[in-house]
Image (cartoon, rainbow, N blue to C red; front, side, top):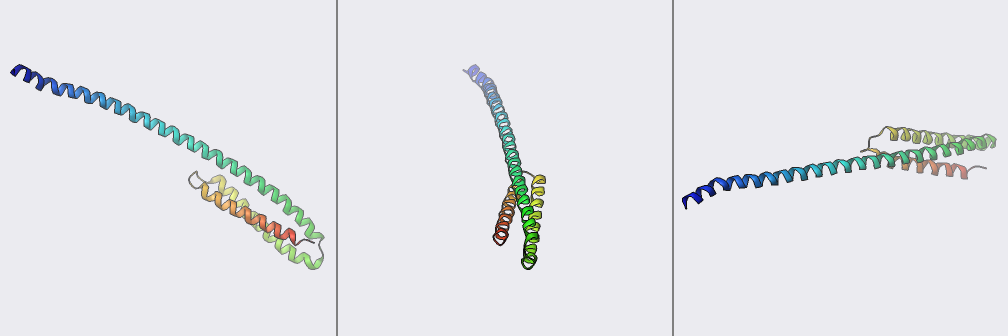
Length: 144
């Protein structure tokens, strides 16, 4: 009986060690898999964010270019206006061009922003574009 007990005392811890090593190996493999999947997810998220950022930049640049053409057309109309209204329209046109320059600065800022901050810059860009469009419409409605 004593021999069995000694074998149990000896082989019990060895068996436990082998089982623990096997569990530990599985845990390491599982952890490595989770880390790999997390990295892949982060990379996919970064790529998606970059694509969204570039698409928004292109759209903002296109809208700005279209508004620039419309502002240039307004400049010609202001020059053709009567002398009495030309001064007032010119002042409004100058303010519109300042807003356009502000939007252009926002586009440049958007190009240089990090992924973490581009959402805030995007919101500011949307607001600036909206304000520029409203100012353009207001000036256009006052044209003779």
